[in-house]
Image (cartoon, rainbow, N blue to C red):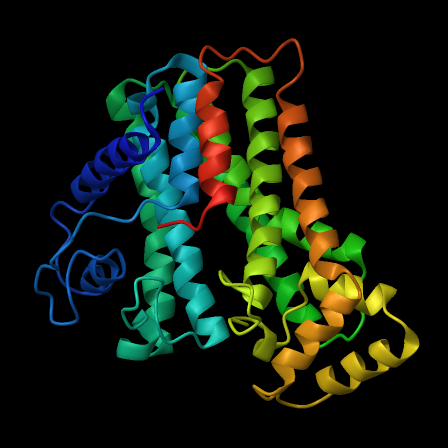
Length: 343
């Protein structure tokens, strides 16, 4: 494997070129919004200063899986572009659901500029375009059976993801959510598309079914571990100061909160319940929530759970029938997806 920074840059440049090609001949209407979301243009349609598309974890997993199977990540470029578009469809819809004003790159979200109705159109357009891009695998020589299997996997993952999103939103209105329910939810919401991404990258590189199945499980567990890491980051932040609660005010049920509600003493449980019974949480509630979670040991517990999921990801690759020429690609991808914040 090449150096970490060069690996990401190589993956990103190849997927960016594939995405650009997918937009050839698509002008005006909803495509201006999609180009804006992908970072290619500003709100007026002018080219952005840095228009190279951000590569998220889904695209990285597809490329790394192909690297691991055959040592040729370029075989998975089309699949990686497709899952990146699918993930961006999720991001657009999440911005609407959460009322998030800014994208990760600090630009206003589509719904904030053009309204939630057009943002929903844009998200749906990204989903449809993802399927269209995946069908381009046939142009690179993939047979019809492989393309159909890829489409089926992508559709199944997106539907499962929607199930997880439904569960996540439903849990906002519940005080008590079990850890079992939480793990089921993130397995769908955060693991389905990452598992699909790894599977599609493996299939594009010629993996046999057992290897593709194992990489799908690896990707799913990695996506779940990433979600737990995000739960921790939302509460404690990069500097562990407790003042970056992205989801607290929306009453999201994260693993640290679930652990505290199940394991704190009666007084702490009662206090957490009274805070979450409020119609709208106040910014001043956040430091107290974090303090209760720390007292319950919820940070350490969540870190241990993330390590457990990473162990299960590694375990999925341990079977004798998993054939990998360059498994170090998966080690790098694991570190990139979970060990640092996506760029």
